[in-house]
Length: 148
Length: 104
Image (tube, rainbow over all chains, first blue to last red; front, top):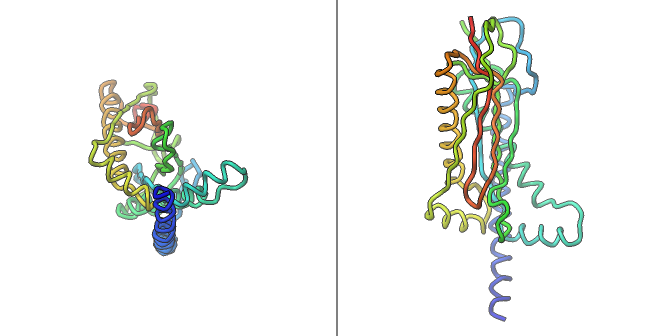
């Protein structure tokens, strides 16, 4: 009985804190995305034919996990089937954050363009008994730095 | 050493292809990080310890990639790809590979 109450309290607490943290993260993502709008990151392989460029490999990576409530929700979804929205937002946040970090490191080196963006996703804790939903996303590309 | 994930380099000519070079690194986190991560797992959010761990691991893999390319006399690595796989709970393998070339 006490165990059940404990789990219920945990669910309620993690729901509020998790939702708050996610909203905060999304606001920060949107704000920084606006800031880095001038720096295009594209998935094209061929470099521009005009202009002198120096190139540099840039990386951005992040590891994010979902909260306890969303994991519980995902387990329910797993039973009934259908869209698992709680994991969709997790991956969306992770990808956008990784791309932003990559752009940050490209902007530090005064790049004007990032070419050939690739994403790499790995789930940490895969195969363990307790299903812990955390993913690592890496975004990488070649930053083109104009030479004077 | 020029490292790029493009296949065509602007204003540069490739004289010779030297074949595939690779670098890998397997790392596990220590227990302290594990406890912190499981706490963070309750509320969600970024697991900073893991992000750092994987970054360090990636740097090490890239160092090995460069060493291998230097050993065979290349001055650039093109078409670099990353790959991550979790082989056991809490341990991840980072693998980097690319084509070693000699540029003019």
